[in-house]
Image (tube, rainbow over all chains, first blue to last red; front, side, top):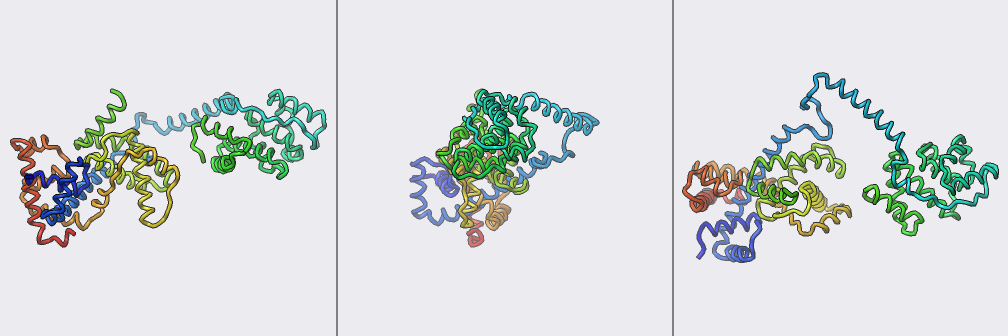
Length: 258
Length: 195
């Protein structure tokens, strides 16, 4: 024999989908199938109405709490407690200091501070066959590239205009952009160079290398959209020569795949 | 206190209806949720704030109804998961298939999490709420107070004994049953309004 209180408790749990033990559920289901069916239907409506009112009460509380908190995305200063009377002045001064500080840090430590780029190995690009640069200069760049002397390469090639660089052999263009990545110098020029990189279907390896370098340049220049587009392109092809390097990049940076 | 223990304690306090803790958890997670959701759902703060209300309501409701007892992730992660589920349901209702693989992965990894969103249906049923609200006004003041404490405030039996000055918890159960019966009796002539 079930008490009235117990019966109502079970009907409530059933109507509002509370967690129940198997035993409770069985008993509640039995109740709703017997002469209490009608009673259950009545109470179900009442319980659900009460549940809705309880929800409304909590939402009302939440709206009150929202008023106590400042806006999240667009912070309004009116609600901010200012601990300095001339807050705006100090705010601007701190911002300027921060910008200079960051700029200085980047200048000092970048890209050596980027472990991924520091560890990135150069791809063998040793046979240069075409281009407008003299053979001696080409040989110098290729040799220094093999030795990893990227600063020297930038000294040698950095003075060239974009048009001059575009007239170089494709491999020399890649050497220039890789050196730019390694040294953090002339990144915009390197990006422009790779954006006009000669399309040659017979040389898929160079095209893949170009995409990878362009990806890294986009990252360095903070161009998220371009970076994601290139990342997606490379990761869609498991046979891409730089596939694993890109995976490694996302892992090291703790970024989610595009 | 370890993080797990702290989280367990928080969940228990919310389940018991500790309004101070509910408010604290609500406020602690709000800014993070809104910044994340604005980006994730490409929506404005106003819309996302409403979504946060719904997610937090579902979170508290699932705790109260015993559907959520432990969390293997942070509360913020749970709330984000609920928001994705709600958005998914919304899209499904609009017969638009749009859910990202990332969302699916979240639910696959958190299979143990059961989320019941029926409280939102009850909340959105204005007609029924209005009917029950007017019925509540027709029962005795002591019953009104008792049902409010139980259903609105989610007070536990020992607290109700204290507030209502009853002798023990059995009296609370008995009175609750009597008050609900009273409510049902008054509701009978207006049944069609409730259904």
